[in-house]
Length: 353
Ligand SMILES: [Zn+2]
Ligand SMILES: [Zn+2]
Image 1 (cartoon, rainbow, N blue to C red):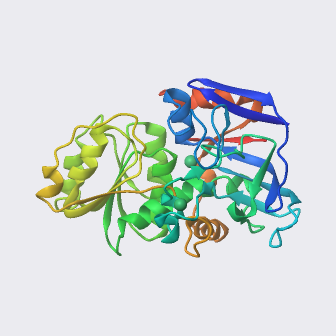
Image 2 (cartoon, rainbow, N blue to C red):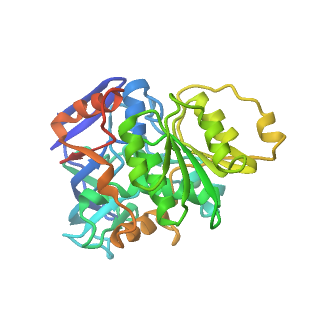
């Protein structure tokens, strides 16, 4: 079968590989669609970052690696111990793999496992392939009203929902979002669905700013005006919370400065570089800066994958509006090239397999 393998920086190859064996606890998924994630793009432009050079301690996986962790498809084979899934079911995949033994796994926080691996990043089974063998516990069934092309977007929206939950907002809170790429836009949609109306989006690229406006946000072009000053002026001195979703020094510091005294900043980005910041901006105003990492694993009833699936089914979110291109697996490199091009209007590219 055909699959896209990541060999290193600017080196992704579509090759013919052997199909994996379906173990007793696994299902075989015929992949329908897999999204190119911002983190895949980081790996392509500046990696390997999270893709292990040496065998991963838990999964044993190393370069070259089958990429893709935002995908959905239809089950075509079921391992003999799997009782809750059937051939023909449409499913999406929660890529988290954890050890089950460390203090974080024991506390129900498998997404913070000391040996964490993600399918398509540091574990086998990436979705840029015709078929993928997935442990049944990583699969989330899709209702009929959520087609697999939408199912592939449940992962980035789960990142967004987890980030919004980390902000611990209450009704009427105001929010600033720095950066409206796919995750920033998904955060704006989740905020909108949650009834948060005072949302300011700071984004230099016109197409992304426009889409944020369509989702109900007030938008600011930071090239044309001082974003922090405008946010503060519109919110009596600062928002209750801010999301940093751009991953550079300027937005990191601006997100902090945009919040009110005792405000909360959620850092969603993965940074390629260190940043210079003054800790007094946190100390003197009693601000809280917190990270957010992926989403909860499927063993949690309050997991974001289940919640987002339901929000898609209920029409509370508009995932299709983030998809700007649909390409074939053999064209995957053109997808990476478009996403790294600052002149391109691409936001989320789906690879249809
Ligand atoms: Zn992702
Ligand atoms: Zn663990």
